[in-house]
Image (tube, rainbow, N blue to C red; front, side, top):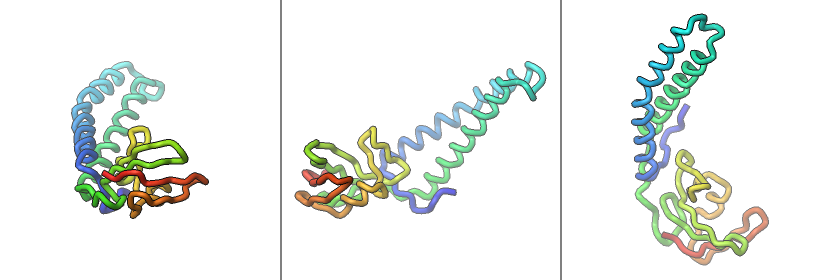
Length: 148
Protein backbone atom coordinates (compact mmCIF):
# COMPACT_ATOMS: atom_id res chain seq x y z
CA UNK A 1 0.00 0.00 0.00
CA UNK A 2 1.30 3.45 -0.95
CA UNK A 3 1.33 6.02 1.80
CA UNK A 4 -0.61 9.20 1.16
CA UNK A 5 0.90 12.64 0.55
CA UNK A 6 3.97 11.47 -1.31
CA UNK A 7 6.30 14.34 -2.13
CA UNK A 8 7.58 14.48 -5.72
CA UNK A 9 9.46 17.08 -7.68
CA UNK A 10 7.98 18.01 -11.06
CA UNK A 11 10.91 16.16 -12.66
CA UNK A 12 10.15 13.07 -10.58
CA UNK A 13 6.50 13.24 -11.65
CA UNK A 14 7.52 13.46 -15.32
CA UNK A 15 9.87 10.48 -14.90
CA UNK A 16 7.09 8.39 -13.35
CA UNK A 17 4.65 9.40 -16.09
CA UNK A 18 7.21 8.40 -18.72
CA UNK A 19 7.83 5.04 -17.02
CA UNK A 20 4.08 4.45 -16.79
CA UNK A 21 3.64 5.20 -20.48
CA UNK A 22 6.47 2.80 -21.41
CA UNK A 23 5.02 0.05 -19.22
CA UNK A 24 1.57 0.45 -20.72
CA UNK A 25 3.07 0.33 -24.23
CA UNK A 26 4.92 -2.91 -23.33
CA UNK A 27 1.68 -4.78 -22.58
CA UNK A 28 1.03 -6.02 -26.16
CA UNK A 29 4.56 -7.43 -26.51
CA UNK A 30 4.23 -9.28 -23.20
CA UNK A 31 0.83 -10.65 -24.23
CA UNK A 32 2.36 -11.84 -27.50
CA UNK A 33 5.19 -13.59 -25.61
CA UNK A 34 2.60 -15.35 -23.44
CA UNK A 35 0.59 -16.47 -26.49
CA UNK A 36 3.71 -17.74 -28.27
CA UNK A 37 4.91 -19.60 -25.18
CA UNK A 38 1.45 -21.08 -24.62
CA UNK A 39 1.67 -22.65 -28.09
CA UNK A 40 4.73 -24.65 -26.96
CA UNK A 41 2.45 -27.02 -25.06
CA UNK A 42 2.55 -28.24 -21.45
CA UNK A 43 2.39 -25.06 -19.35
CA UNK A 44 3.49 -26.75 -16.13
CA UNK A 45 7.03 -27.22 -17.47
CA UNK A 46 7.13 -24.32 -19.91
CA UNK A 47 9.82 -21.91 -18.66
CA UNK A 48 9.15 -19.38 -21.44
CA UNK A 49 5.48 -19.20 -20.41
CA UNK A 50 6.33 -18.87 -16.71
CA UNK A 51 8.85 -16.13 -17.48
CA UNK A 52 6.40 -14.17 -19.63
CA UNK A 53 3.62 -14.47 -17.03
CA UNK A 54 6.04 -13.31 -14.32
CA UNK A 55 7.02 -10.30 -16.46
CA UNK A 56 3.34 -9.52 -16.99
CA UNK A 57 2.65 -9.69 -13.25
CA UNK A 58 5.61 -7.42 -12.40
CA UNK A 59 4.60 -4.94 -15.12
CA UNK A 60 0.98 -4.77 -13.96
CA UNK A 61 2.04 -4.36 -10.32
CA UNK A 62 4.38 -1.50 -11.24
CA UNK A 63 1.67 0.17 -13.32
CA UNK A 64 -0.70 0.06 -10.35
CA UNK A 65 2.02 1.33 -8.01
CA UNK A 66 2.89 4.30 -10.26
CA UNK A 67 -0.78 5.18 -10.76
CA UNK A 68 -1.30 5.18 -6.99
CA UNK A 69 1.82 7.32 -6.43
CA UNK A 70 0.73 9.85 -9.06
CA UNK A 71 -2.81 9.96 -7.66
CA UNK A 72 -1.60 10.85 -4.16
CA UNK A 73 1.51 12.88 -5.04
CA UNK A 74 2.11 16.37 -3.75
CA UNK A 75 4.36 18.26 -6.17
CA UNK A 76 7.29 20.08 -4.58
CA UNK A 77 7.93 23.45 -6.16
CA UNK A 78 11.31 23.99 -4.54
CA UNK A 79 12.04 25.15 -1.09
CA UNK A 80 13.39 28.36 0.31
CA UNK A 81 16.86 28.98 -1.00
CA UNK A 82 18.26 29.87 2.42
CA UNK A 83 17.19 26.68 4.25
CA UNK A 84 17.72 23.04 3.26
CA UNK A 85 14.35 21.42 2.55
CA UNK A 86 12.43 19.39 0.01
CA UNK A 87 13.17 20.54 -3.51
CA UNK A 88 16.45 22.27 -2.70
CA UNK A 89 19.86 21.35 -4.04
CA UNK A 90 22.55 21.50 -1.41
CA UNK A 91 26.33 21.43 -1.72
CA UNK A 92 28.08 19.88 1.27
CA UNK A 93 31.60 19.56 2.56
CA UNK A 94 31.40 15.95 3.65
CA UNK A 95 34.53 15.23 5.66
CA UNK A 96 36.77 17.16 3.25
CA UNK A 97 34.98 16.03 0.09
CA UNK A 98 32.44 18.24 -1.70
CA UNK A 99 29.19 16.62 -2.79
CA UNK A 100 25.95 18.00 -4.18
CA UNK A 101 22.52 16.50 -3.54
CA UNK A 102 18.95 17.31 -4.43
CA UNK A 103 16.69 16.71 -1.45
CA UNK A 104 13.63 14.82 -2.71
CA UNK A 105 10.87 12.60 -1.38
CA UNK A 106 11.62 8.90 -0.84
CA UNK A 107 9.86 7.79 -4.04
CA UNK A 108 12.37 9.45 -6.35
CA UNK A 109 15.51 9.16 -4.20
CA UNK A 110 18.54 7.79 -6.03
CA UNK A 111 21.90 8.60 -4.43
CA UNK A 112 23.77 7.52 -7.58
CA UNK A 113 21.97 10.35 -9.40
CA UNK A 114 22.59 12.81 -6.58
CA UNK A 115 19.03 12.62 -5.21
CA UNK A 116 18.64 11.86 -1.51
CA UNK A 117 15.45 11.38 0.44
CA UNK A 118 14.40 13.83 3.11
CA UNK A 119 13.67 10.70 5.18
CA UNK A 120 17.21 9.27 4.84
CA UNK A 121 19.61 9.75 7.76
CA UNK A 122 21.64 12.41 5.93
CA UNK A 123 18.45 14.06 4.65
CA UNK A 124 17.07 14.28 8.18
CA UNK A 125 20.38 15.62 9.49
CA UNK A 126 20.61 18.51 7.02
CA UNK A 127 16.93 19.48 6.73
CA UNK A 128 16.41 22.92 8.18
CA UNK A 129 20.10 23.83 8.02
CA UNK A 130 21.46 27.04 6.52
CA UNK A 131 24.69 27.85 4.69
CA UNK A 132 27.56 27.56 7.14
CA UNK A 133 25.77 25.16 9.50
CA UNK A 134 27.65 22.02 10.52
CA UNK A 135 26.23 18.66 11.53
CA UNK A 136 27.85 15.40 12.48
CA UNK A 137 26.95 12.40 10.36
CA UNK A 138 28.57 8.96 10.58
CA UNK A 139 31.41 10.39 12.62
CA UNK A 140 32.25 13.08 10.02
CA UNK A 141 31.49 16.76 10.00
CA UNK A 142 29.08 17.83 7.30
CA UNK A 143 29.06 21.53 6.46
CA UNK A 144 26.45 23.27 4.29
CA UNK A 145 28.37 25.16 1.61
CA UNK A 146 25.56 26.30 -0.68
CA UNK A 147 21.80 25.92 -1.15
CA UNK A 148 20.12 26.31 -4.54
